Length: 379
Ligand code: FNR
Image (cartoon, rainbow, N blue to C red):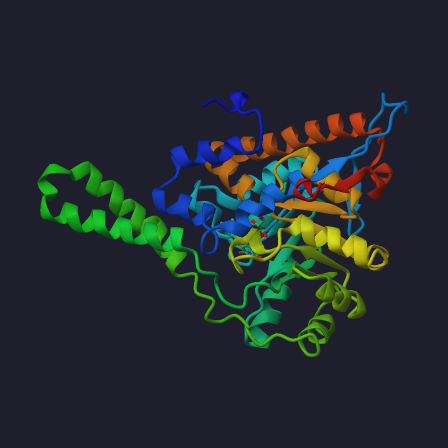
Protein backbone atom coordinates (compact mmCIF):
# COMPACT_ATOMS: atom_id res chain seq x y z
CA UNK A 1 0.00 0.00 0.00
CA UNK A 2 1.47 3.39 -0.91
CA UNK A 3 2.14 5.63 2.08
CA UNK A 4 -0.26 8.20 0.64
CA UNK A 5 -3.14 5.76 1.17
CA UNK A 6 -2.51 5.38 4.89
CA UNK A 7 -5.25 7.39 6.57
CA UNK A 8 -4.78 6.67 10.24
CA UNK A 9 -2.13 5.47 12.67
CA UNK A 10 -3.64 2.02 13.23
CA UNK A 11 -3.13 1.12 9.57
CA UNK A 12 0.64 1.00 9.97
CA UNK A 13 0.35 -2.29 11.85
CA UNK A 14 -1.03 -4.12 8.83
CA UNK A 15 1.47 -2.41 6.53
CA UNK A 16 4.32 -3.61 8.74
CA UNK A 17 2.94 -7.12 9.06
CA UNK A 18 3.24 -7.49 5.30
CA UNK A 19 6.91 -6.54 5.13
CA UNK A 20 8.65 -7.67 8.30
CA UNK A 21 9.63 -11.20 9.32
CA UNK A 22 7.13 -13.28 11.23
CA UNK A 23 9.36 -13.20 14.28
CA UNK A 24 9.88 -9.46 14.18
CA UNK A 25 6.16 -8.79 13.90
CA UNK A 26 5.48 -11.09 16.84
CA UNK A 27 8.08 -9.23 18.89
CA UNK A 28 6.58 -5.81 18.10
CA UNK A 29 2.97 -6.84 18.64
CA UNK A 30 3.34 -9.17 21.58
CA UNK A 31 1.98 -8.41 25.03
CA UNK A 32 1.53 -10.29 28.29
CA UNK A 33 -0.62 -13.42 28.74
CA UNK A 34 -3.96 -13.04 26.91
CA UNK A 35 -3.13 -9.54 25.67
CA UNK A 36 -5.98 -7.97 27.66
CA UNK A 37 -4.17 -4.90 28.96
CA UNK A 38 -2.73 -4.06 25.55
CA UNK A 39 -6.24 -4.21 24.07
CA UNK A 40 -7.81 -2.24 26.91
CA UNK A 41 -5.12 0.44 26.77
CA UNK A 42 -6.59 1.49 23.43
CA UNK A 43 -10.24 0.67 24.15
CA UNK A 44 -10.31 2.54 27.44
CA UNK A 45 -10.05 5.85 25.60
CA UNK A 46 -13.53 5.17 24.25
CA UNK A 47 -14.98 5.58 27.76
CA UNK A 48 -13.99 9.24 27.73
CA UNK A 49 -16.21 11.78 25.98
CA UNK A 50 -15.86 15.49 25.31
CA UNK A 51 -17.70 18.58 26.44
CA UNK A 52 -16.75 20.94 23.63
CA UNK A 53 -17.09 24.71 23.85
CA UNK A 54 -18.39 26.86 21.03
CA UNK A 55 -18.15 30.34 19.58
CA UNK A 56 -14.48 30.83 20.19
CA UNK A 57 -12.16 32.37 17.65
CA UNK A 58 -10.74 29.32 15.85
CA UNK A 59 -8.77 30.53 12.85
CA UNK A 60 -5.42 30.20 14.59
CA UNK A 61 -4.65 27.00 16.50
CA UNK A 62 -1.37 26.51 18.36
CA UNK A 63 -0.62 22.85 19.11
CA UNK A 64 2.86 23.47 20.47
CA UNK A 65 3.90 22.76 24.04
CA UNK A 66 7.00 22.02 26.07
CA UNK A 67 8.27 18.81 27.58
CA UNK A 68 10.74 19.38 30.43
CA UNK A 69 11.14 22.86 29.00
CA UNK A 70 11.96 21.69 25.47
CA UNK A 71 9.67 22.70 22.66
CA UNK A 72 7.47 20.09 21.05
CA UNK A 73 5.30 20.77 17.98
CA UNK A 74 2.47 18.69 19.43
CA UNK A 75 1.94 17.16 22.91
CA UNK A 76 3.41 13.85 21.90
CA UNK A 77 6.74 12.03 21.83
CA UNK A 78 8.27 8.73 20.81
CA UNK A 79 8.33 6.19 23.65
CA UNK A 80 11.52 4.16 23.64
CA UNK A 81 11.00 0.73 22.13
CA UNK A 82 13.77 -1.78 21.53
CA UNK A 83 15.18 -3.31 18.37
CA UNK A 84 13.74 -1.14 15.61
CA UNK A 85 16.21 -2.77 13.20
CA UNK A 86 14.15 -5.94 13.27
CA UNK A 87 11.77 -4.07 10.99
CA UNK A 88 14.08 -1.92 8.85
CA UNK A 89 17.86 -1.77 8.34
CA UNK A 90 18.03 1.87 9.46
CA UNK A 91 16.04 1.12 12.61
CA UNK A 92 16.00 3.85 15.26
CA UNK A 93 17.67 6.32 12.86
CA UNK A 94 14.42 6.40 10.87
CA UNK A 95 12.66 7.56 14.00
CA UNK A 96 15.33 10.14 14.82
CA UNK A 97 15.09 11.67 11.36
CA UNK A 98 11.29 11.55 11.28
CA UNK A 99 10.92 13.03 14.76
CA UNK A 100 13.51 15.72 14.04
CA UNK A 101 11.85 16.74 10.79
CA UNK A 102 8.51 17.01 12.60
CA UNK A 103 9.63 18.81 15.73
CA UNK A 104 8.90 16.12 18.29
CA UNK A 105 11.16 14.45 20.85
CA UNK A 106 12.37 10.85 20.71
CA UNK A 107 13.05 8.78 23.79
CA UNK A 108 15.72 6.24 22.85
CA UNK A 109 15.52 2.72 24.30
CA UNK A 110 18.38 1.30 26.36
CA UNK A 111 18.02 -1.70 24.05
CA UNK A 112 18.14 0.24 20.80
CA UNK A 113 19.52 -1.75 17.89
CA UNK A 114 21.78 1.09 16.71
CA UNK A 115 24.43 2.49 19.01
CA UNK A 116 23.44 5.60 20.98
CA UNK A 117 26.13 7.43 19.04
CA UNK A 118 24.73 6.38 15.67
CA UNK A 119 21.32 7.59 16.81
CA UNK A 120 22.69 10.89 18.08
CA UNK A 121 24.53 11.35 14.79
CA UNK A 122 21.27 10.89 12.87
CA UNK A 123 19.80 14.07 14.31
CA UNK A 124 18.64 16.47 11.61
CA UNK A 125 19.72 19.48 13.66
CA UNK A 126 22.41 19.68 16.33
CA UNK A 127 19.85 21.03 18.80
CA UNK A 128 17.33 18.23 18.17
CA UNK A 129 16.28 16.86 21.56
CA UNK A 130 16.70 13.20 22.51
CA UNK A 131 15.72 11.60 25.82
CA UNK A 132 17.15 8.34 27.12
CA UNK A 133 15.24 5.37 28.52
CA UNK A 134 17.34 3.62 31.12
CA UNK A 135 17.23 0.00 32.14
CA UNK A 136 19.45 0.24 35.18
CA UNK A 137 22.27 -2.27 35.31
CA UNK A 138 22.64 -4.10 38.64
CA UNK A 139 26.24 -2.93 38.65
CA UNK A 140 26.07 0.76 39.55
CA UNK A 141 29.38 1.49 37.86
CA UNK A 142 28.09 0.07 34.57
CA UNK A 143 24.90 2.10 34.91
CA UNK A 144 26.93 5.26 35.44
CA UNK A 145 29.04 4.46 32.38
CA UNK A 146 25.91 4.29 30.28
CA UNK A 147 24.57 7.54 31.73
CA UNK A 148 27.89 9.28 31.05
CA UNK A 149 27.80 8.11 27.45
CA UNK A 150 24.35 9.53 26.77
CA UNK A 151 25.20 12.74 28.63
CA UNK A 152 28.25 13.12 26.42
CA UNK A 153 26.08 12.56 23.34
CA UNK A 154 23.74 15.35 24.47
CA UNK A 155 20.68 13.41 25.62
CA UNK A 156 18.51 15.66 27.79
CA UNK A 157 16.61 13.44 30.24
CA UNK A 158 16.65 9.99 31.83
CA UNK A 159 13.46 7.94 31.79
CA UNK A 160 14.13 5.18 34.31
CA UNK A 161 11.96 2.19 33.49
CA UNK A 162 10.40 0.83 36.68
CA UNK A 163 7.80 -1.62 35.38
CA UNK A 164 10.10 -4.28 33.98
CA UNK A 165 12.16 -5.98 36.69
CA UNK A 166 11.42 -9.18 34.77
CA UNK A 167 10.24 -9.66 31.22
CA UNK A 168 6.49 -10.22 30.95
CA UNK A 169 5.03 -13.48 29.71
CA UNK A 170 4.68 -12.82 26.00
CA UNK A 171 3.41 -16.01 24.42
CA UNK A 172 3.07 -14.60 20.92
CA UNK A 173 6.79 -14.04 20.96
CA UNK A 174 7.65 -17.47 22.32
CA UNK A 175 5.33 -19.18 19.87
CA UNK A 176 6.82 -17.36 16.90
CA UNK A 177 10.28 -18.61 17.85
CA UNK A 178 9.03 -22.19 18.07
CA UNK A 179 7.21 -21.98 14.77
CA UNK A 180 10.33 -20.81 13.02
CA UNK A 181 12.24 -23.71 14.53
CA UNK A 182 9.55 -26.08 13.27
CA UNK A 183 9.75 -24.70 9.76
CA UNK A 184 13.49 -25.05 9.87
CA UNK A 185 13.31 -28.66 11.04
CA UNK A 186 10.79 -29.61 8.37
CA UNK A 187 12.74 -28.09 5.55
CA UNK A 188 15.88 -29.87 6.65
CA UNK A 189 14.07 -33.10 5.72
CA UNK A 190 13.40 -32.09 2.11
CA UNK A 191 15.75 -29.27 1.60
CA UNK A 192 16.11 -30.04 -2.11
CA UNK A 193 12.59 -28.77 -2.67
CA UNK A 194 12.79 -25.54 -0.81
CA UNK A 195 16.08 -23.77 -1.34
CA UNK A 196 14.49 -20.35 -1.39
CA UNK A 197 12.38 -20.96 1.67
CA UNK A 198 15.38 -22.31 3.48
CA UNK A 199 17.39 -19.25 2.68
CA UNK A 200 14.62 -17.00 3.95
CA UNK A 201 14.27 -18.88 7.18
CA UNK A 202 18.02 -18.81 7.74
CA UNK A 203 18.00 -15.08 7.27
CA UNK A 204 15.20 -14.71 9.73
CA UNK A 205 16.90 -16.83 12.33
CA UNK A 206 20.33 -15.27 11.90
CA UNK A 207 19.11 -11.74 11.64
CA UNK A 208 16.24 -11.63 14.05
CA UNK A 209 15.98 -14.48 16.44
CA UNK A 210 19.26 -13.78 18.13
CA UNK A 211 18.34 -10.15 18.53
CA UNK A 212 15.31 -10.88 20.62
CA UNK A 213 16.37 -14.03 22.41
CA UNK A 214 19.56 -12.28 23.52
CA UNK A 215 17.46 -9.70 25.24
CA UNK A 216 17.61 -11.18 28.68
CA UNK A 217 17.27 -8.84 31.57
CA UNK A 218 19.97 -10.78 33.38
CA UNK A 219 21.99 -7.68 34.18
CA UNK A 220 19.12 -5.44 35.10
CA UNK A 221 18.65 -4.30 38.65
CA UNK A 222 15.62 -6.07 40.11
CA UNK A 223 16.33 -4.69 43.57
CA UNK A 224 15.68 -1.03 42.88
CA UNK A 225 14.00 0.90 45.71
CA UNK A 226 12.62 4.37 46.41
CA UNK A 227 15.07 4.78 49.28
CA UNK A 228 18.27 3.82 47.48
CA UNK A 229 17.89 4.00 43.72
CA UNK A 230 16.31 7.42 43.33
CA UNK A 231 18.78 9.35 45.54
CA UNK A 232 21.62 7.42 43.93
CA UNK A 233 20.46 8.34 40.42
CA UNK A 234 20.07 11.97 41.51
CA UNK A 235 23.63 11.92 42.83
CA UNK A 236 25.15 10.67 39.58
CA UNK A 237 23.41 12.89 37.02
CA UNK A 238 22.10 16.42 36.71
CA UNK A 239 19.69 15.41 33.97
CA UNK A 240 15.98 15.45 34.76
CA UNK A 241 14.75 12.06 35.98
CA UNK A 242 11.37 10.64 35.04
CA UNK A 243 9.96 7.31 36.20
CA UNK A 244 8.59 5.31 33.28
CA UNK A 245 5.93 2.78 34.21
CA UNK A 246 3.86 4.34 37.01
CA UNK A 247 0.62 2.38 37.34
CA UNK A 248 -0.96 3.55 40.57
CA UNK A 249 -1.95 6.77 42.29
CA UNK A 250 0.11 5.73 45.32
CA UNK A 251 3.32 5.51 43.31
CA UNK A 252 2.55 8.81 41.58
CA UNK A 253 2.39 10.38 45.05
CA UNK A 254 5.69 8.78 46.08
CA UNK A 255 7.32 10.04 42.88
CA UNK A 256 6.22 13.60 43.62
CA UNK A 257 7.45 13.28 47.21
CA UNK A 258 10.80 11.97 45.96
CA UNK A 259 11.15 15.15 43.91
CA UNK A 260 11.21 13.48 40.53
CA UNK A 261 10.91 15.71 37.49
CA UNK A 262 8.12 13.64 36.04
CA UNK A 263 6.34 10.34 35.67
CA UNK A 264 5.26 8.43 32.61
CA UNK A 265 2.01 6.63 33.37
CA UNK A 266 2.55 3.42 31.44
CA UNK A 267 2.16 -0.33 31.59
CA UNK A 268 4.85 -0.91 28.96
CA UNK A 269 2.26 -1.26 26.22
CA UNK A 270 0.62 -4.17 28.06
CA UNK A 271 3.80 -6.24 27.82
CA UNK A 272 4.48 -6.57 31.55
CA UNK A 273 1.73 -7.10 34.14
CA UNK A 274 -1.41 -8.49 32.53
CA UNK A 275 -4.50 -6.76 33.96
CA UNK A 276 -2.55 -3.65 34.77
CA UNK A 277 -5.14 -0.87 34.49
CA UNK A 278 -5.26 0.93 31.13
CA UNK A 279 -3.00 3.99 31.26
CA UNK A 280 -5.79 6.53 30.66
CA UNK A 281 -7.70 5.06 33.64
CA UNK A 282 -4.66 5.53 35.88
CA UNK A 283 -4.24 9.11 34.67
CA UNK A 284 -7.94 9.72 35.34
CA UNK A 285 -7.57 8.44 38.89
CA UNK A 286 -4.58 10.68 39.54
CA UNK A 287 -6.61 13.63 38.26
CA UNK A 288 -9.54 12.76 40.52
CA UNK A 289 -7.66 11.82 43.66
CA UNK A 290 -4.54 13.99 43.54
CA UNK A 291 -4.96 16.94 41.16
CA UNK A 292 -2.16 18.68 43.05
CA UNK A 293 0.41 16.28 41.57
CA UNK A 294 0.05 17.86 38.12
CA UNK A 295 1.59 21.06 39.46
CA UNK A 296 4.48 19.30 41.20
CA UNK A 297 5.92 17.39 38.24
CA UNK A 298 5.20 16.70 34.59
CA UNK A 299 2.93 13.73 34.00
CA UNK A 300 2.94 11.87 30.70
CA UNK A 301 1.07 8.84 29.45
CA UNK A 302 1.67 6.08 26.95
CA UNK A 303 -0.16 2.92 25.93
CA UNK A 304 -2.78 2.57 23.22
CA UNK A 305 -2.56 6.14 21.97
CA UNK A 306 -3.62 5.97 18.32
CA UNK A 307 -5.78 9.05 17.63
CA UNK A 308 -5.50 12.76 18.05
CA UNK A 309 -8.54 12.59 20.32
CA UNK A 310 -6.69 10.12 22.59
CA UNK A 311 -3.96 12.71 23.06
CA UNK A 312 -6.49 15.50 23.59
CA UNK A 313 -8.29 13.49 26.28
CA UNK A 314 -5.04 12.83 28.14
CA UNK A 315 -3.97 16.46 27.86
CA UNK A 316 -7.38 17.63 29.12
CA UNK A 317 -6.88 15.39 32.15
CA UNK A 318 -3.52 17.01 32.79
CA UNK A 319 -0.95 15.02 30.84
CA UNK A 320 1.84 17.17 29.47
CA UNK A 321 2.27 14.84 26.48
CA UNK A 322 1.58 11.30 25.25
CA UNK A 323 4.06 8.72 24.02
CA UNK A 324 3.57 6.18 21.26
CA UNK A 325 5.57 2.97 20.93
CA UNK A 326 4.37 0.42 18.39
CA UNK A 327 3.07 2.84 15.74
CA UNK A 328 6.59 4.18 15.22
CA UNK A 329 8.10 0.71 15.01
CA UNK A 330 5.48 -0.34 12.46
CA UNK A 331 5.73 2.86 10.42
CA UNK A 332 9.52 2.79 10.14
CA UNK A 333 9.40 -0.91 9.28
CA UNK A 334 7.09 -0.35 6.33
CA UNK A 335 8.13 3.09 5.11
CA UNK A 336 11.35 4.19 6.85
CA UNK A 337 11.63 7.78 8.05
CA UNK A 338 8.79 8.89 5.74
CA UNK A 339 6.45 6.59 7.66
CA UNK A 340 7.52 8.16 10.93
CA UNK A 341 6.82 11.64 9.56
CA UNK A 342 3.42 10.45 8.38
CA UNK A 343 2.46 9.11 11.84
CA UNK A 344 3.21 12.51 13.30
CA UNK A 345 1.42 14.39 10.50
CA UNK A 346 -1.71 12.31 10.87
CA UNK A 347 -1.83 12.92 14.61
CA UNK A 348 -1.04 16.60 14.19
CA UNK A 349 -3.93 16.97 11.75
CA UNK A 350 -6.26 15.09 14.09
CA UNK A 351 -5.17 17.25 17.02
CA UNK A 352 -5.72 20.51 15.13
CA UNK A 353 -9.16 19.41 13.96
CA UNK A 354 -10.05 18.15 17.44
CA UNK A 355 -8.93 21.38 19.10
CA UNK A 356 -11.02 23.44 16.66
CA UNK A 357 -14.11 21.43 17.42
CA UNK A 358 -13.42 21.44 21.14
CA UNK A 359 -13.05 25.20 21.10
CA UNK A 360 -9.46 25.12 22.35
CA UNK A 361 -7.01 27.41 20.59
CA UNK A 362 -3.95 26.40 22.52
CA UNK A 363 -2.85 23.49 24.67
CA UNK A 364 -3.53 25.36 27.92
CA UNK A 365 -7.19 25.67 26.92
CA UNK A 366 -7.57 21.89 27.11
CA UNK A 367 -8.97 21.49 30.62
CA UNK A 368 -10.39 18.66 32.75
CA UNK A 369 -13.94 20.01 32.42
CA UNK A 370 -13.82 19.17 28.72
CA UNK A 371 -13.63 15.43 29.41
CA UNK A 372 -16.08 13.13 31.10
CA UNK A 373 -15.64 9.46 31.87
CA UNK A 374 -18.80 7.64 30.87
CA UNK A 375 -19.68 4.23 32.20
CA UNK A 376 -22.57 3.31 29.91
CA UNK A 377 -23.31 0.10 31.81
CA UNK A 378 -24.07 2.08 34.93
CA UNK A 379 -26.52 4.40 33.18
C1 FNR B 1 8.56 -1.50 24.22
N1 FNR B 1 8.64 -0.72 25.38
C2 FNR B 1 9.86 -0.50 25.99
N2 FNR B 1 9.94 0.25 27.11
C3 FNR B 1 11.13 0.48 27.70
O1 FNR B 1 11.18 1.17 28.70
N3 FNR B 1 12.28 -0.03 27.16
C4 FNR B 1 12.27 -0.80 26.04
O2 FNR B 1 13.33 -1.23 25.57
C5 FNR B 1 11.02 -1.08 25.44
N4 FNR B 1 10.95 -1.88 24.35
C6 FNR B 1 9.75 -2.08 23.71
C7 FNR B 1 9.70 -2.87 22.57
C8 FNR B 1 8.50 -3.03 21.90
C9 FNR B 1 8.47 -3.87 20.65
C10 FNR B 1 7.32 -2.43 22.38
C11 FNR B 1 6.01 -2.56 21.67
C12 FNR B 1 7.37 -1.67 23.53
C13 FNR B 1 7.43 -0.04 25.89
C14 FNR B 1 7.26 1.33 25.21
O3 FNR B 1 8.22 2.24 25.67
C15 FNR B 1 5.89 1.95 25.49
O4 FNR B 1 5.67 2.02 26.87
C16 FNR B 1 4.74 1.22 24.82
O5 FNR B 1 5.11 0.74 23.55
C17 FNR B 1 3.55 2.15 24.67
O6 FNR B 1 2.43 1.46 24.20
P1 FNR B 1 2.00 1.45 22.66
O7 FNR B 1 2.08 2.86 22.11
O8 FNR B 1 2.92 0.51 21.96
O9 FNR B 1 0.59 0.97 22.73
